[in-house]
Length: 201
Ligand SMILES: Cc1cc2nc3c(=O)[nH]c(=O)nc-3n(C[C@H](O)[C@H](O)[C@H](O)COP(=O)(O)O)c2cc1C
Image (tube, rainbow, N blue to C red):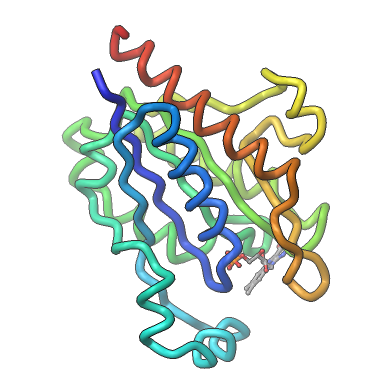
């Protein structure tokens, strides 16, 4: 059986988008059928300037298709990504999660593998709390959270057993480093492997 995996993210300034794209590529490499999706953008406050600076055309070229409930129901495994916002997930992703009530009520979100990824501006700015906040919803789904833990030596380098995270720095412009790229590849591969085992492969 080919594992079906959705990567669903929100990203205002592109960091989480880059992480999502890397995860999608690694999951494909691991043999999964992948959907890469973004939740609807609702620019507010400080993000507005960055958003306005980009043309609609460039925006469309960068963005994945919009996520729907079917992208979760369809999948054996789902990776959710969000920037850290006040130590929590972005409202845009929460709105998407909150839109899944009908699917939740029918048990269509349960028994899947889930994990999360995030980026923040500062090293102690709440990446772990963001991932734990995301996982609160996954418990209610009846999902099977598959964190990376320290299941490979490389996890002692990026250092986040809860998921994958990246620090963008004071100017919000630090690119993903090798430690984060390795951690993203590891998470995608691990999630595809565990989802495959659950499916009886
Ligand atoms: C409203 C708002 C709240 C934020 N809260 C935090 C925070 O709690 N901790 C932190 O380190 N960075 C915080 N940031 C910075 C973002 O997490 C950071 O820029 C992130 O890497 C952006 O990801 P993106 O490029 O995918 O949009 C916040 C940014 C905004 C706009």
